[in-house]
Length: 64
Image (cartoon, rainbow, N blue to C red):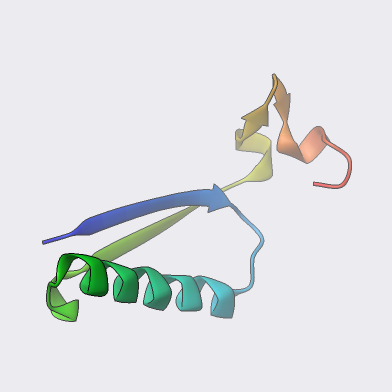
């Protein structure tokens, strides 16, 4: 049973996340030739204060 974990910054619209789950599932089904019912996708959204780039929280980076 394929299990996909995706971590990303918070803030994207719910519909975009749903579409990503559908698209990732379809890709796994087509690539691995497994039934859609066997694919699991977990999306974890991380607050921008908890994600750092070059030692700086994303929440402190202008334009992010």
